[in-house]
Length: 119
Image 1: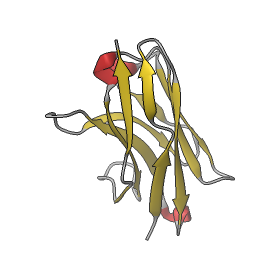
Image 2 (image 1 turned 90 degrees about the vertical axis):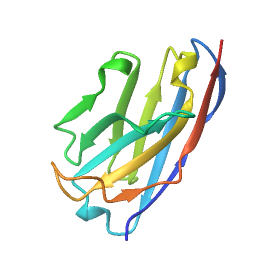
Image 3 (image 1 turned 180 degrees about the horizontal axis):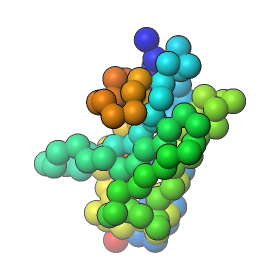
């Protein structure tokens, strides 16, 4: 069972930056795709970005493209999400997730880290 623990959330003003981290433990060798999602109050969970184990395939959703960047340090078994030029609409609970396949759903989820952006 892969376990994921997010950290790095907080409260910032619009235009600020944060770096979220997701530490993974367990059989991480089985994971093919790593991802970040977010859920704002009263809204459904939204996909943000994913990266494959090799780092060859990286995708960031259009709404945050150019402001957010996903990366992974395989040696540390840690996934990152760099959040720049934050906007109030980025306020959400951010989750990391891990998938054992390229095209299937995500199998493991963290508990989330809160990001709050004030105007």
